[in-house]
Length: 154
Length: 154
Image (cartoon, rainbow over all chains, first blue to last red; front, side):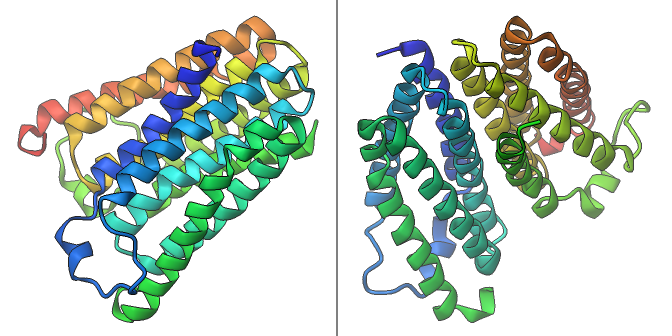
């Protein structure tokens, strides 16, 4: 563990997590039509806490690796955390589901690029991104499903 | 120039810039009380475009440097770009000026840490951050001044 590196990358996650706190679901989210397979509300903060810890650990391992490709991989990491911060304000703040679907799709691409770049350098760092791509895949499908069921909120 | 690195870091800036496009000043900003020294409206997009290009160039140079301290410096860069993305939604979206002042103050700290870490590795990369810290200092002072003049919007 390199705590300086870990907490630096975790701080970026904290800023992204703050958008989720500032722009939380609230009553509006309760009232919109959602698919049967929508994860229960309690799972979201649990999942995100786990994922932020995993992605900070993964970034720390890449940063420690000394690999010449690390700065490119950490660049992808910076793209995904910024897009991560963008989604909540667009979905819960502006309630623009179509724009939010574009954001979460771009996030999926950025997470996939990061995952592949991390795997090439350190397989443990790559593995730490597997739950994240799974969750963002679910989030993308959920955003699309919610958009289809609430076309008036596109 | 390493275009792969440059455009990766510029993509993160694009995601941060998108929050400024999604949460733009609008009529509300026109009506709030502002200090005499508030920069003219046209200057903001000009300044941010310049700053995003400078900070992407700086990150590219650090990523290319091969310096062992680069992953830590790029971690600070990731923190500042995520906080950068957070400010517009909090100020223009939620209109929570006090929370936005906390965000912009944290952004100032993250930009200062990045600037110092960059200077230690490559003085040109450090210089490319000087306009940014100057602008964020102004933005912090402006946020504080606007909060003082519009206490009902704290």
